[in-house]
Image (cartoon, rainbow, N blue to C red; front, side, top):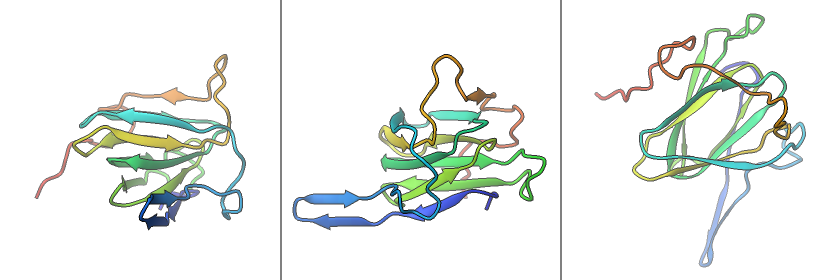
Length: 151
């Protein structure tokens, strides 16, 4: 696991009315602070990658569909420099993934319907000076191939 990454298994509580799933709590041992909550989506087969933040921690949770979330650690001082983590998350694997600053991340919709991903970053989005840095999702600085691996 990449240094600083945390995975929290989420508990789904179903009853005859529907279900409830807690995503992130202020008393979680890894909780730092709240910045905002937002929803991003992707259509089947779409890749949304790569980006990183200098200050912000992200907390990803897929609440509809299935996504492959991938992280890459380029940090020179990190004991996990060069490591890649893949997480298959969503309806069939309800987890939250905490992503440290400076770690590249992105996701691909691997299902048959639109995927809904909630992010709970530690910082609110700054429209004048965004803490968001992007690189090419295919063949750029991140050594990762988004193609499906069959077999």
